[in-house]
View (cartoon, rainbow, N blue to C red):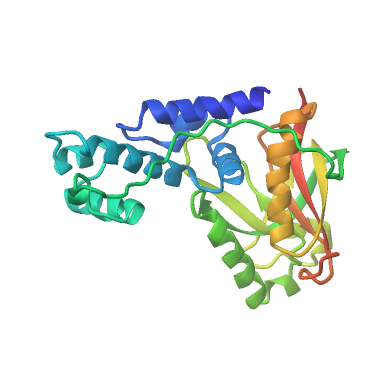
Length: 279
C-alpha cells in the first residue's frame, strides 16, 4: 500500500506547515507524485481541492486559537497566512457563520474540520473492466489550452463546449481528451482535445501535433452518460484499482477516449487510458 502511504505523507506535510506558506509542488515532492497527480488523486478521493482542505484546516484551528484568552484577531490572521484582519474575517465568517470577534460569546457555534488520514476500505462485488495494452508510438492532433490544477474541474468542460460550439469537431473530431505531463515546478498543465493524426486530412491553424511514445496502458471501459460516468470511473481507478493492482502510474499522457453515440445515454461507451508499469 505504498500508494496510500505516499498520500498520507502529503497530508502530514500539510499538517506540519499550516502556519507557513504551502505550495503544492512542495507537498507533491514529499509524496513521490507529480504535482498534477497528487492534486488529482487528492480531489478524486476527498471531493475537495488541496487548497480547500488547507483553508478548512486553518480556519478550524483559528477558531480554537481565538477561544484562548489574550489572543488577538490580527495575530491569528497573520499566523494562518492572511494579509489583513478583513480578509481573515470574511473567510472565517464563510466557514463558521460568525465573525472572529463573536467566537468568545456564550453559545456561539463553531465548525470543526479534523485532519484527514487516507485509508483504503475494501468493498467488493462491483466489476471494473480493464485491459493492459502495449501500444506503439502514435501521433495526435490537438487543440490545447493550459489549466490550473485547482480550477480544471470546471474549466475543462467549458473548453469542450467551446470546441463544439466553434465547429472545431468538424475539422478534428473530439475523439480524445488528453492531459499532458506537467512540467516540473509548474502549477499548470496542458490539456488537449482532438484525435489521432491519421484521421485528419489537414491540421487546422491553432492545432498542434504531438507524438506519444510507446507505452503500456491500463485501459478502462466506461459505460454511462457523460460526464458523471467517466468522473465516477476516475474515482474508482484511484480508490480501488491502483491501490490493489500490480501496476503503478508513471509520468505520461492521461487519455479519455470517446466513441460516437449519444453521450447522454446510459449505454454510452467511453474509455480511460492511463500509463502504467509493473510494480
